[in-house]
Image (cartoon, rainbow, N blue to C red; front, side, top):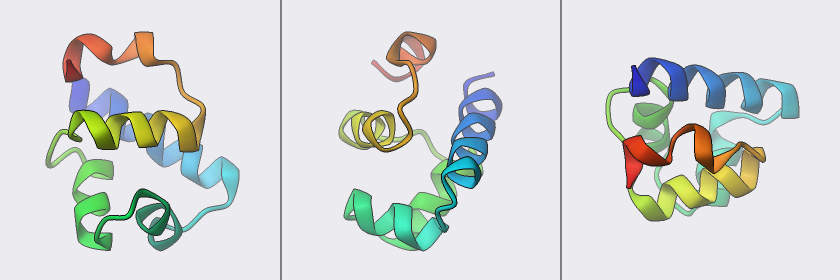
Length: 69
């Protein structure tokens, strides 16, 4: 549930903002492949990366916090 819902939401948010995966990974100070794994739902983001994604994409913490924290 978390993986599909969260990954789908960040994919859509990234597209709406017109950002590439490379641009997001640079803003997050992580590797492109690391970001791709999060966006594909292959791994959960760390708490730190989750917070970065919230700030980049302006998503609601409440929608996902139980899955991450």
